[in-house]
Amino acid sequence: MAKRKTKYVCQECGYESAKWMGKCPGCNNWNTLVEEIEASNMKNRHGLGIDKRSISKPEKITAIESQKEPRMTTSMKEFNRVLGGGIVPGSLMLIGGDPGIGKSTLLLQISSQLAEKQLPVLYISGEESTRQTKLRADRLDIKTDMLYVLSETNLFDIANQIEEIKPSLVIIDSIQTIFREEVTSAPGSVSQVRECTGELMRIAKTNGIPIFIVGHVTKEGAIAGPRMLEHMVDAVLYFEGERHHSYRILRGVKNRFGSTNEMGIFEMKESGLREVLNPSEIFLEERSQGAAGSTVVASMEGTRPVLVEIQALISPSSFGNPRRMATGIDHGRVPLLMAVLEKRVGLMLQNQDAYIKVAGGVKLDEPAIDLAIAISIASSFRDQPTKPDDIFVGEVGLTGEIRRVSRIEQRVQEAAKLGFKRVICPKKNLDGWTIPKSIEVIGVDTVQEALQVGV
Ligand code: TYD
Ligand code: MG
Image 1 (cartoon, rainbow, N blue to C red):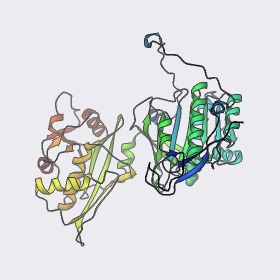
Image 2 (cartoon, helix red, strand yellow):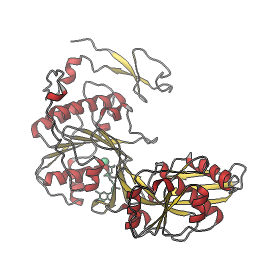
Image 3 (cartoon, rainbow, N blue to C red):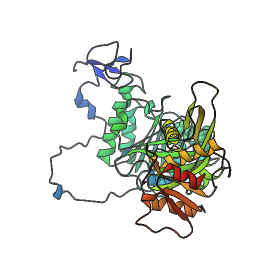
Image 4 (cartoon, rainbow, N blue to C red):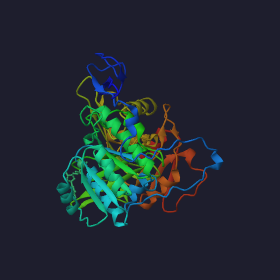
């Protein structure tokens, strides 16, 4: 038997070293290096049941057959769109999210939808017994013969079952419970997660079977295990939402087969997740019209425009250091936009507390929302409501200029569709497209102009 070597692996970042060190040179954390037995003789590495590896040679690009990847589509359009149009055969996808947010529910529903199309699906749970999965399936009203469930944590046995059943889709719930025998550390450790993911990748690629793996999220919001995990897989999706709200957002943060930043919206009901096809309506549902500090922005989420309310509360600060708080947007934008308003418009904001919130628990991260934030701040500060039928779009520059945004036409169309009357947008965006008849589009060059029109 080959001699087994040990190595030291940082449990935070995956840094490897031949000798022990108190401080990890990779992430500068203390006491994170743990001794592990190297998944030794590398020959064995690919020894799990279904090794069909062949030696590959370079090919001329013109000689390679170009084929459109046939994608498997589920009956949830929102889900297909986040993946870029469906599930690509042989891809490995990671779904991350807080415990209890609905990952298992979502994947079980997806599984049953494919199974109903007569595609065999293998749902492997390392967290729940098959009885528990059955209970969930009953709640979701799943009755299909093609859905197989397995309660198993040993990757070797999992690989054998995949070989036997030859499913069209495999779900691993969750990667933190799966282990390989050769690796001595506990399931969920960096080396287990990495080794198991590597093996699953190989199974997916050699058999052309798409695999979803569930990954839990740590307190800091990253998927537990090394960052490396995200690099290994083909697509990374986050399932998020506030537990007290019934809305859930599926967000693509990495996708080798489609665009990222795509988001799908679902609602958690008694009988499982339902897709929400008209998100703007739900985001604006609870809006109190005519309140100071509220504006609506048309923001692009991937390829789709959504209308979202932005709220600001500006009130005199009772402390020397005024507060600047923001939920749903980049914290850094708030002091910046307040400085622009102070310097270019002359609003005395420096001794005011500012709280900014994107309603509905959405996160917006494109610069086109700047103008709406600035208008909200000014509206709350002056205690003057904006018009309830106005939409604001535009990036704000440091001199107070309003900069061009992408896809103005789609944003305006969405606003018109939902019955808004005016869009205040960058003047530079006005050319080259036809404005819908039902809506007025007002171009502005500076924040001052926008304030005159809007507040
Ligand atoms: P779950 O899918 O177990 O979350 P995760 O796998 O991300 O940990 O979701 C659990 C929550 O969803 C739980 O609080 C109950 C709720 N739920 C419903 O509201 N309706 C349903 O039909 C199901 C199956 C779960
Ligand atoms: Mg679960």
